[in-house]
Length: 243
Image (cartoon, rainbow, N blue to C red):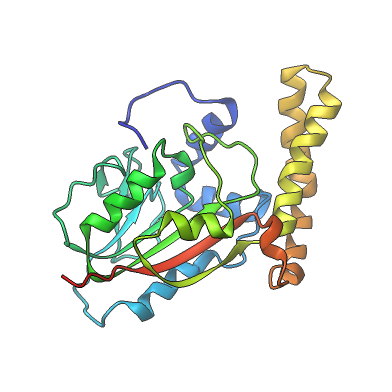
């Protein structure tokens, strides 16, 4: 994430940005017609069992967008959406060292030019024994918000968090989600004959037609080899320091 300013967005991101002004409706649309079926969408709640039963625990949601996952979470984003408490850059967090109990970041690191620096910042501000939850893409098409830089394999997400002790790592959205996304893009490309306005129309049309297929992931997501073409992975880790 970079410093916020009104820069030119691509056509699809402009549409999404407009809908983000209505968080509940946008969240419903994403669940319904997005090519990605986040079977373990609420897996961020798993961090609760790893965080001490301190009601005053500080839990930070980085890259929150307009969404309020939990009332107790502090929402931080590069863009001043509704429900955002702090507007800041993920690579320059405005917190002291060892001050945060837990951090949640869901599909935001692919939009950060230097994601490793972002994870290092999370490590810096986190208390010893603090817990991180990360959800990032693997097999997904380009989706600017407002930029899009990287993807990670299952081993890649573990390497990205090499300073943490891994507690859990698994498939967040399965292989059918990958297929639906790529097929939607491919059909729009193939049938648009290089006519960009037609491509945009076809992309929206196939998004509306193909989205139900993603629910096949209810069958495939637990397959031992699903990680080979998974749409996303999630990671839970703990900060452990001897000193």
